[in-house]
Length: 171
Image (cartoon, rainbow, N blue to C red):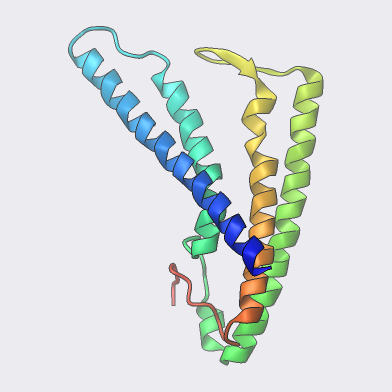
């Protein structure tokens, strides 16, 4: 299980790096668009649409990695106020709830992808493409998040019997 945890961590880290690369490309594209427009050379009329899709993709690509690092939004005031052993038990409940929610959203996302594909829906903005490509990151990401919750439970069972020290905390 430890080896799978490492391999999965490597996979989601690479996905986050792809998300970072996309954000860098978006930054270059926006700079080029602004520069071209300021020099009155026209600009890149498609850059707004592409920027929207890049933000969407980068968010989905990096979500599992951020969960692994504990850089997600975490309200743990109650957990910190409880005795460490009780907080640790609640961590288990929350992780199992995370698995359930992610699986439900992955299934719903997959249904949306399949329905869009069956209907032949097309997104038309500056350029057109089939809608299911835009929906596909949803089930994939929520499946990856569910898997990360499984590994969180594994790491929780292997660690000390206390609340996690996540990177982002309100306590």
